[in-house]
Amino acid sequence: MFEMIIFISNDPTLSHFVHPWCGAEKYTHRISAGRNHKMKHLKTYLLSSAALVGALFLVALILIFGPSPKVAARVAPAPSPPADFTIYALGLNNPRGLKFGPDGNLYVAEGGAGGSNSTNGICPELQLTDFPGPYLGSNSGGRISVIINGVRTTVIDTLPSSQTVNGLVSGVADVAFIGDTMYALLAGAGCSHGVTSLPNGIVRINQNGPPSLIANLSAFQQANPVAHPNPPDFEPDGTWYSMIEVRGDLYAVEPNHGEVDRITTSGQITRIVDVTVTQGHIVPTAIAYNGNFFFGNLGLFPVDPGTERIMKLNPSGHLDTWATGLTTVQGLVIDQRDRMYVLESMTNPGFPSPAQIGSGRVVRIDPNGEQTVIATGLSFPGGMTLGPDGALYVSNLSFGAPPGAGQIVRIELPNKPAKTQAHINSKAATELPDNVTADLPREAPATARQDSVSVGPPFLVNPVVIETANIDSVLQQDALKKLSEDSELSSVSISIDEGRAVLTGTVNSAGARMKAAKLIKSMRGVKAIENKISVSHP
Image (cartoon, rainbow, N blue to C red):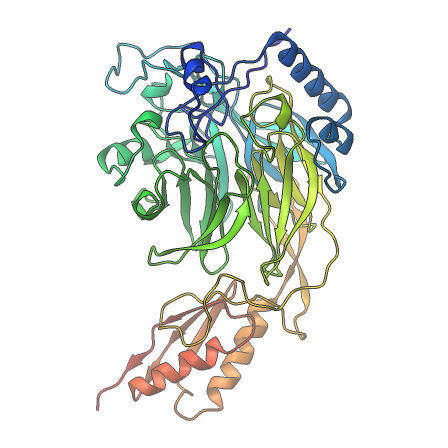
């Protein structure tokens, strides 16, 4: 018989807030004393025997039959649209972030199964002595799996995994690819988590040989504290949550301290934004990129539906609120039509508990700001990605369930025409300064054609064929034609990659330089401009 633990924390990465759930009797009186929803301290919610039995029963239903609207209806009395997803893979250990690799297969980061080793006495200045510590860890057990035709296969299971005193597990938080190379973001490593082999950081997964640590994120955070840490909710090694690749660099979000960092493959770490400076302890989680960065936040407990948001982060580190009215955001993706999909882990008011089973959902935000619920019935989901088939893939039962209970579910997206309106909270994309990214709709020109590109496998044997749109070359040809038609700009060259244009060459005046940038910005499908044109001075 396994023990299911429903716990409370102010952060999502299964550490001191290893996720929104933990339990310790010493904190129970703080909740009953009436602390409000803006509480700054880790809190607990202890289940009665009846509640625990109910939780196990509902989880059993989910494991046997899969998440369903019927299960969701029992625990969430508010009416909701029907679920529209199928179970794609089973047998995962606390699945978190997931990405499709260049071979076309799905790779899943997993927290693992925890550990039993204590570092108490090895790093007393880091080890948590209060709940949910002290942590117990293992130098192995954190796992990455690949899903091929719905069947899970282990890629690596020798990465760290750790757990709280209640058995809440964290390990590998996310994965990302640069070319054919996979990188993993570690959240359950470091001495404060009972792990001595590796700190929290980013490791390169080598096809031959053990993984290589390329960036020590534990050391970076300890040497560079954020402006306004939250002492009652503080993890010395951090609790990293999500990671994406942009232009050959990695960008990672850390919820506990509250920051977004850029990491190069050579190990250089740069903080893009300290979220606490302007937002306080909002617990940032999932990140996506579409000309600008966008990230969502989990918020604090108890859950207050509709109070969380999506933030827009430009390359200079400036933050704006982009969308509101959301709840416990833990996944974020943007499709080719600029529609954003937001994964909400729990949507019922209150604390993580059996009442939250089946309350997870996916919300689509159209370019005009309209929000639509497209899938319901998820249970404590923790990550989401967009597949090459145009469907969403979601890690389900990511927290609080026993090893092997985790799932990947597939959500078929409704076939809806693309929106062309501007983002409701975005500023106008015209008249932007040079080298500032434009938040423009990304649409393929009518002349774009589709080529079949054969992609070699980073880890597996058989290559697959993926359909990709040859949009960039069409845009580049059109842009060169426009430039050549203007005598002042005929010497300018342009390259376009994923909608991002780089202008080079020499012109006779600063006015011509600005004219070239404005001309390219006006083209539909161009998302950003980097102006490297030089001006001659006769």
